[in-house]
Length: 331
Image (cartoon, rainbow, N blue to C red; front, side, top):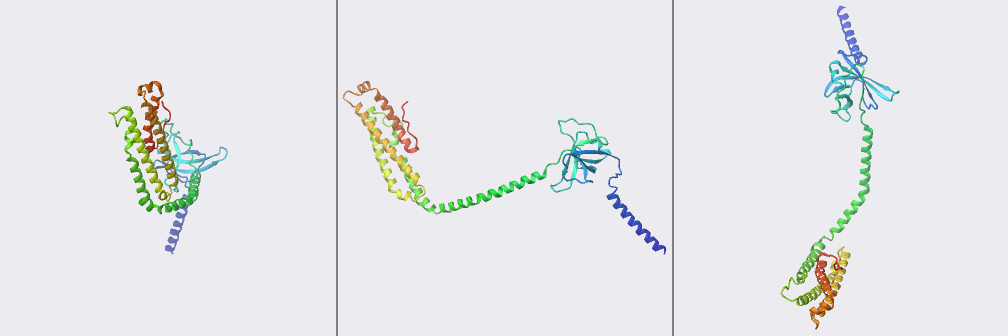
């Protein structure tokens, strides 16, 4: 009989201890066994924070969140913190108080740090002081920006998709011309460039008298005219060779460039013919019965014509090789 009574008392004591533990957790959580102070921290926006959350200085826990109040009169949220009395001297009136989380979705706690380095330390806090906390960032704005960026990238990819496929089709179309370009077009272009660079007359057109320094001026001009006629003949042969292979060039997608090259060569031929005519007139004037000196005295413009001819003789091959425009004015 007594054993049954003891078992009943023991079971009742266990139930009461369990209920006392629940009561301590749910109703007496605000009670603390050590002395401490209470601080009030005000935020304009609180985000996610629960009562009972830890209050830390660095990595050390110094208190807990005791109460959260919404103050509609001032439009702020007041958070009451219980701080261990031993850690109170390390918190100042201008300390920075903000919410922190170890991860993006982790549990938040209140972190207290010293003020900025250029700001002097305030007075240590006392029981009942009110501090201004740093408001948490707008996570919803960050998520909105991420969403807008994702939508923009998807829209850009949809818009560029047809263009990318079109470029791929053009590359496949160009791939069909690869044998023609490598076997026919490129060898023909190299041959033409090699012949253009092999003009023997170009070396004597840089300056009058460089190739024939021992002859008189009249003999040098006559020799340059002979070279000019030979170059004109070579250029006509070069143009004819280009026209003979025109049916090959037109097969490639470069027909407009070939036509422009042909027009440029024809224009150079006309310039060479004009230079030949001016040279012949100058030789006739210098070789007149009155003599070269008398010709210069009678017509001073002959010297200017000679300078113009020398300048045009110098620029003509450069126009042919480097596509430079001829300067028509005589300084």
